Image (cartoon, rainbow, N blue to C red):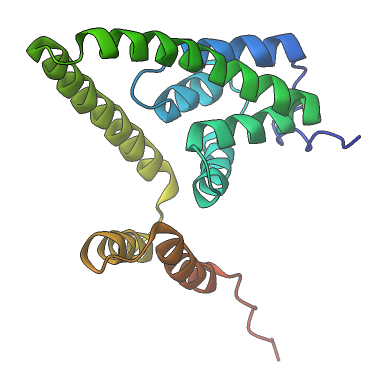
Length: 192
């Protein structure tokens, strides 16, 4: 059985499996439109289980893998806190409320989906969820982007996907490798 990843430098965290399950259940229960902003708010700001740097690193890994960002992130954070059992608790907890909501919403939409007020409500929810994602992007950008090159990498990624129609994995690999090479540690100049 693998051990959980080491705790962050600020000191060891003692988090039980029940706490992991409860917090990810709450995130799944209350995060409408996209849970990534809620994940950051709860895990970084409220619970302080991660700092912004760790959150961005885990989010980057989550976004580069197939699947939903929030569920990938839940697995990574759960594993970091409590090993494989924590990963399992986090994924079940974050998915359970949404699965139940979607079951109910599917039944409701099948019965009432052709009404104009249902369409209007869905448009409002879509706008609000985009706003939540944008707010999180701005918060993370303030803490993560350190120079002009980072903004150039963002622009290249947007252009690659939206203008030149590269797939997201192709853009991530191409721009990601370029960013890695750019940000690689440089050797100090030898002293005489």
